[in-house]
Length: 107
Length: 129
Image (cartoon, rainbow over all chains, first blue to last red; front, side, top):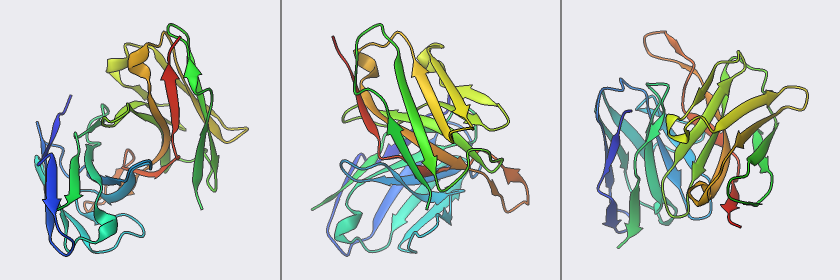
């Protein structure tokens, strides 16, 4: 099983600041990595797939980078609606796995 | 507009079988571009997939379930379902039905097991006597 470790667990930032979230895989997943945003009481929403491709309707405020084992999600300028939990997920292996999440909270 | 909606009991007794159905609208489950999955999230915790299935019949289960799960497609009603037997309190969670989509990589290779692009709203299932 590929373990995805997200860091930090919590990121405290102010609106307008840049957020940088990390996801590290225990072995290579090539570029088969996605990022999701989840707000309280809602289902996750796909932001990024293929490590760097934005999903349909996702603003270029969100960008993904990385390959193999190290990945980053960047939110260029945080807006109030961006404060949420973010999960990474690998789909390189048939045993799909998710990271533990990063909570981006308002400072 | 693709929509998925979960339905089923919100309360199941320990040792019994949890059964949920997902009704898909705006898309056909008869598709080689998508696959259909159940993902759950215990209260306050992270995400875990239960199972997923392609229209071709290829099926994958999370080994952590110890063979307790069964996923199936109902093409006549454009639905898919999951059953989880011998449930315990540890199976209490919000259950999501989800669509995954394949895509062409920059190499030109088609990767059929892509990310999850459409999610149902989720249904809370509690296991309690």
